[in-house]
Length: 218
Image 1 (tube, rainbow, N blue to C red):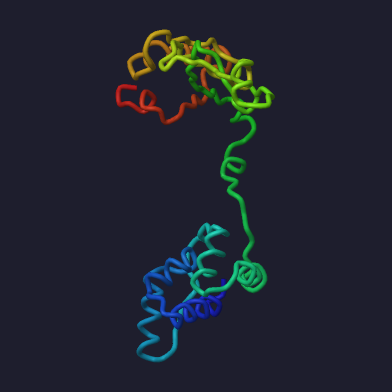
Image 2 (cartoon, helix red, strand yellow):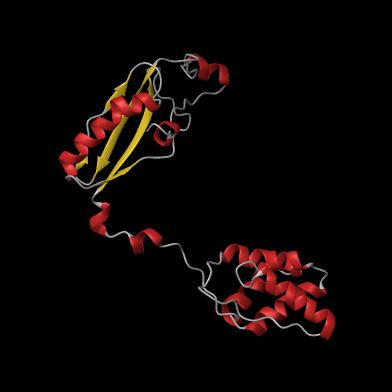
Protein backbone atom coordinates (compact mmCIF):
# COMPACT_ATOMS: atom_id res chain seq x y z
CA UNK A 1 0.00 0.00 0.00
CA UNK A 2 1.27 3.48 -0.86
CA UNK A 3 2.26 5.80 1.99
CA UNK A 4 0.12 8.50 0.38
CA UNK A 5 -3.01 6.38 0.83
CA UNK A 6 -2.12 5.62 4.44
CA UNK A 7 -1.45 9.31 5.10
CA UNK A 8 -4.78 10.39 3.67
CA UNK A 9 -6.72 7.83 5.72
CA UNK A 10 -4.87 8.71 8.92
CA UNK A 11 -5.28 12.45 8.34
CA UNK A 12 -9.00 12.11 7.70
CA UNK A 13 -9.47 10.09 10.88
CA UNK A 14 -7.46 12.69 12.81
CA UNK A 15 -9.57 15.53 11.43
CA UNK A 16 -12.69 13.63 12.48
CA UNK A 17 -11.45 13.77 16.07
CA UNK A 18 -9.91 10.31 16.40
CA UNK A 19 -7.01 9.84 18.80
CA UNK A 20 -3.77 8.10 17.90
CA UNK A 21 -4.94 4.84 19.46
CA UNK A 22 -8.23 5.01 17.57
CA UNK A 23 -6.40 5.63 14.29
CA UNK A 24 -4.13 2.67 14.98
CA UNK A 25 -7.10 0.40 15.66
CA UNK A 26 -8.82 1.57 12.49
CA UNK A 27 -5.71 1.00 10.36
CA UNK A 28 -4.69 -2.22 12.10
CA UNK A 29 -2.27 -4.17 9.95
CA UNK A 30 -1.46 -1.21 7.72
CA UNK A 31 1.02 0.68 9.90
CA UNK A 32 2.51 0.47 13.37
CA UNK A 33 1.26 2.40 16.40
CA UNK A 34 4.69 4.00 16.85
CA UNK A 35 4.70 5.39 13.30
CA UNK A 36 1.20 6.84 13.74
CA UNK A 37 2.14 8.73 16.92
CA UNK A 38 5.35 9.95 15.30
CA UNK A 39 3.38 11.23 12.32
CA UNK A 40 0.86 13.01 14.56
CA UNK A 41 3.70 14.65 16.44
CA UNK A 42 5.12 15.99 13.17
CA UNK A 43 1.66 17.17 12.18
CA UNK A 44 1.35 19.31 15.29
CA UNK A 45 4.81 20.81 14.76
CA UNK A 46 5.01 21.21 10.98
CA UNK A 47 1.38 21.03 9.92
CA UNK A 48 2.05 18.00 7.70
CA UNK A 49 1.91 14.29 8.35
CA UNK A 50 4.47 11.83 6.95
CA UNK A 51 3.86 8.11 7.23
CA UNK A 52 6.00 5.48 5.54
CA UNK A 53 5.02 2.07 4.24
CA UNK A 54 5.23 -0.69 6.87
CA UNK A 55 8.49 -2.59 6.54
CA UNK A 56 9.11 -6.32 6.80
CA UNK A 57 6.80 -9.15 5.82
CA UNK A 58 3.25 -8.29 4.73
CA UNK A 59 0.66 -8.70 7.47
CA UNK A 60 -2.56 -10.64 7.25
CA UNK A 61 -5.47 -8.21 6.90
CA UNK A 62 -9.03 -9.35 7.50
CA UNK A 63 -11.19 -7.90 4.77
CA UNK A 64 -14.25 -7.64 7.05
CA UNK A 65 -12.40 -5.57 9.65
CA UNK A 66 -10.74 -3.50 6.96
CA UNK A 67 -14.15 -2.47 5.62
CA UNK A 68 -16.15 -2.14 8.85
CA UNK A 69 -13.74 -0.10 10.96
CA UNK A 70 -13.09 2.77 8.49
CA UNK A 71 -16.78 2.66 7.56
CA UNK A 72 -17.83 3.35 11.15
CA UNK A 73 -15.12 5.93 11.79
CA UNK A 74 -15.79 7.93 8.63
CA UNK A 75 -19.56 7.52 8.91
CA UNK A 76 -19.92 6.14 5.39
CA UNK A 77 -21.43 2.92 4.10
CA UNK A 78 -19.50 -0.30 3.48
CA UNK A 79 -20.36 0.00 -0.22
CA UNK A 80 -18.40 3.28 -0.28
CA UNK A 81 -15.35 1.86 1.48
CA UNK A 82 -15.22 -1.34 -0.59
CA UNK A 83 -14.28 0.32 -3.95
CA UNK A 84 -11.57 2.31 -2.18
CA UNK A 85 -10.07 -0.88 -0.77
CA UNK A 86 -10.37 -2.88 -3.99
CA UNK A 87 -9.73 -0.27 -6.70
CA UNK A 88 -7.68 2.49 -5.10
CA UNK A 89 -5.62 0.45 -2.64
CA UNK A 90 -5.51 -2.73 -4.71
CA UNK A 91 -6.45 -5.10 -1.88
CA UNK A 92 -8.09 -8.47 -2.43
CA UNK A 93 -9.79 -10.78 0.07
CA UNK A 94 -7.81 -13.99 0.58
CA UNK A 95 -8.89 -17.07 2.50
CA UNK A 96 -6.52 -18.88 4.85
CA UNK A 97 -4.77 -21.70 3.00
CA UNK A 98 -2.19 -22.77 5.58
CA UNK A 99 -3.20 -26.43 5.68
CA UNK A 100 -3.58 -26.71 1.92
CA UNK A 101 -0.17 -25.16 1.29
CA UNK A 102 1.79 -26.80 4.11
CA UNK A 103 0.26 -30.27 4.39
CA UNK A 104 0.60 -32.53 1.39
CA UNK A 105 -1.84 -35.24 0.40
CA UNK A 106 0.59 -37.95 1.50
CA UNK A 107 0.75 -36.46 4.99
CA UNK A 108 -3.03 -36.38 5.38
CA UNK A 109 -3.09 -40.11 4.72
CA UNK A 110 -0.86 -40.63 7.76
CA UNK A 111 -3.14 -38.82 10.24
CA UNK A 112 -5.08 -40.88 12.78
CA UNK A 113 -8.13 -38.87 13.87
CA UNK A 114 -9.75 -39.64 17.22
CA UNK A 115 -12.95 -38.61 18.97
CA UNK A 116 -15.35 -39.80 21.64
CA UNK A 117 -19.13 -39.70 21.97
CA UNK A 118 -21.52 -40.46 24.79
CA UNK A 119 -24.47 -42.63 23.76
CA UNK A 120 -27.55 -42.52 25.98
CA UNK A 121 -29.76 -45.60 26.28
CA UNK A 122 -32.85 -43.39 26.37
CA UNK A 123 -32.84 -43.11 22.59
CA UNK A 124 -32.40 -40.18 20.25
CA UNK A 125 -34.98 -37.44 19.93
CA UNK A 126 -34.87 -34.99 17.03
CA UNK A 127 -37.61 -32.36 17.33
CA UNK A 128 -37.03 -31.27 13.74
CA UNK A 129 -37.87 -34.68 12.27
CA UNK A 130 -40.30 -36.25 14.75
CA UNK A 131 -43.58 -34.41 14.22
CA UNK A 132 -47.26 -35.31 14.45
CA UNK A 133 -49.94 -33.41 12.55
CA UNK A 134 -53.08 -32.74 14.57
CA UNK A 135 -55.79 -30.12 14.99
CA UNK A 136 -54.80 -29.25 18.57
CA UNK A 137 -51.93 -29.77 20.99
CA UNK A 138 -54.05 -32.13 23.12
CA UNK A 139 -54.85 -34.28 20.10
CA UNK A 140 -51.15 -34.42 19.20
CA UNK A 141 -50.27 -35.48 22.76
CA UNK A 142 -52.84 -38.28 22.61
CA UNK A 143 -51.25 -39.54 19.39
CA UNK A 144 -47.85 -39.84 21.04
CA UNK A 145 -46.35 -36.40 20.63
CA UNK A 146 -44.90 -36.41 24.16
CA UNK A 147 -41.36 -37.76 24.34
CA UNK A 148 -40.42 -39.15 27.75
CA UNK A 149 -36.79 -39.17 28.77
CA UNK A 150 -35.04 -39.84 32.07
CA UNK A 151 -33.32 -36.88 33.67
CA UNK A 152 -30.03 -38.77 34.00
CA UNK A 153 -30.24 -41.60 31.46
CA UNK A 154 -27.80 -44.48 31.53
CA UNK A 155 -25.28 -44.61 28.74
CA UNK A 156 -21.76 -45.44 27.64
CA UNK A 157 -18.82 -43.47 26.31
CA UNK A 158 -17.51 -44.71 22.96
CA UNK A 159 -14.09 -43.74 21.62
CA UNK A 160 -12.87 -44.54 18.10
CA UNK A 161 -10.25 -43.51 15.55
CA UNK A 162 -10.45 -43.13 11.77
CA UNK A 163 -7.78 -42.76 9.10
CA UNK A 164 -7.27 -43.28 5.39
CA UNK A 165 -7.03 -47.05 5.95
CA UNK A 166 -10.21 -47.49 7.96
CA UNK A 167 -11.57 -47.44 11.50
CA UNK A 168 -9.93 -48.74 14.66
CA UNK A 169 -11.54 -50.88 17.32
CA UNK A 170 -14.01 -48.88 19.43
CA UNK A 171 -13.23 -48.47 23.11
CA UNK A 172 -16.37 -48.57 25.27
CA UNK A 173 -16.31 -46.98 28.72
CA UNK A 174 -19.38 -48.26 30.56
CA UNK A 175 -18.95 -46.62 33.95
CA UNK A 176 -18.04 -43.00 34.52
CA UNK A 177 -16.26 -40.70 32.12
CA UNK A 178 -12.87 -40.68 30.44
CA UNK A 179 -10.31 -39.02 32.71
CA UNK A 180 -6.56 -38.84 32.12
CA UNK A 181 -5.88 -42.15 33.91
CA UNK A 182 -8.44 -44.08 31.85
CA UNK A 183 -7.27 -42.28 28.73
CA UNK A 184 -3.71 -43.48 29.31
CA UNK A 185 -4.65 -47.00 30.41
CA UNK A 186 -7.55 -47.88 28.09
CA UNK A 187 -7.38 -45.66 25.00
CA UNK A 188 -3.80 -44.75 24.12
CA UNK A 189 -2.65 -48.41 23.90
CA UNK A 190 -5.40 -49.09 21.35
CA UNK A 191 -4.44 -45.96 19.43
CA UNK A 192 -0.80 -47.03 19.29
CA UNK A 193 -1.45 -50.66 18.37
CA UNK A 194 -4.19 -50.13 15.78
CA UNK A 195 -2.54 -47.02 14.37
CA UNK A 196 0.72 -48.91 13.84
CA UNK A 197 -1.07 -51.82 12.19
CA UNK A 198 -2.90 -49.57 9.73
CA UNK A 199 -0.38 -46.76 9.10
CA UNK A 200 2.99 -48.17 10.07
CA UNK A 201 5.45 -46.94 12.67
CA UNK A 202 5.26 -43.29 11.60
CA UNK A 203 1.86 -41.60 11.81
CA UNK A 204 0.29 -38.45 13.26
CA UNK A 205 -2.10 -38.97 16.18
CA UNK A 206 -4.77 -36.25 16.34
CA UNK A 207 -6.68 -35.47 19.52
CA UNK A 208 -8.73 -32.46 20.60
CA UNK A 209 -8.19 -30.18 23.57
CA UNK A 210 -10.18 -32.18 26.14
CA UNK A 211 -8.73 -32.20 29.66
CA UNK A 212 -7.71 -35.91 29.58
CA UNK A 213 -5.77 -35.24 26.36
CA UNK A 214 -3.85 -32.22 27.67
CA UNK A 215 -3.23 -33.36 31.25
CA UNK A 216 0.42 -33.37 32.38
CA UNK A 217 0.50 -37.12 33.03
CA UNK A 218 -0.90 -37.75 29.55
